[in-house]
Image (cartoon, rainbow, N blue to C red; front, side):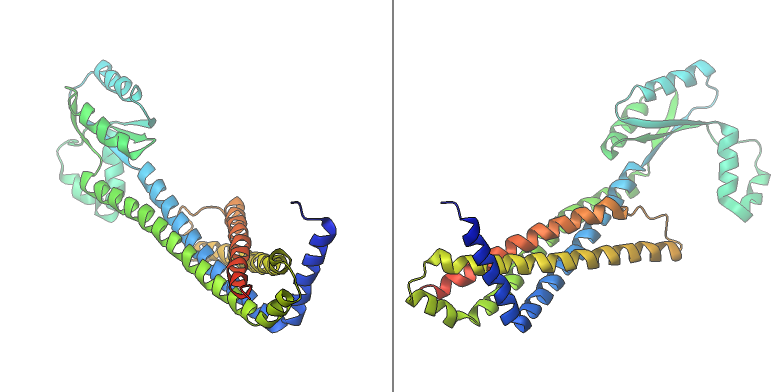
Length: 297
């Protein structure tokens, strides 16, 4: 049965009246909802950024394909063609012996004089290969090492395997943490709204005695809970937006702009909309659960 517009307007008006009559309880409830959703949003943005960083680092894994000495131009071209023909190859860069030595000297910095005593150039030519996904790196290394023109193919196996373990832990642990915080937020908000309903239990009982239906009693409280969730989630979203922007500015000011953080827009807007939906749903659900107890007269 569809609710008439006039009836809905009455329920909405009753919800606003309740806001005014119980202003202190309303403010306390909004503050609790705001704080709970803000903490949830902070953890959510932190976990999502850690996951983003982990994915970024995974995608920066470079496979170094070292070639044997004495290869002809044709043999080097054949290896390059073989690499480019592999799946998920993003970039392929050829580094000749002279460039490899120059890069090595640059990395040594002030200690580059140590290379002056070398007789010739012992560094091999190589290809630096970046793939779309980290899983493709291992497979490509195994294939290329079987090529007769390749000395070895390395991607820092031990370090990268540890990186893969860390990224898996971040994704799984982050998901579990977000779910735990979501349930904790539901519990806190539901109990806060239950206190609001408890303060008005006599009003509910009187309405039952004079013949009001369950739906007539429930709807103003349901709308009130949804309004509490809406108000608290909007405030939490605004605070989260400002906090995130401030955090990015601090990273730049402290020389950490190189960190692959997710840009503010539209990321925080999406998180704020998620908090908005969570706040409204939890507010309505908390009210429905709380009112049900006091309608058993």
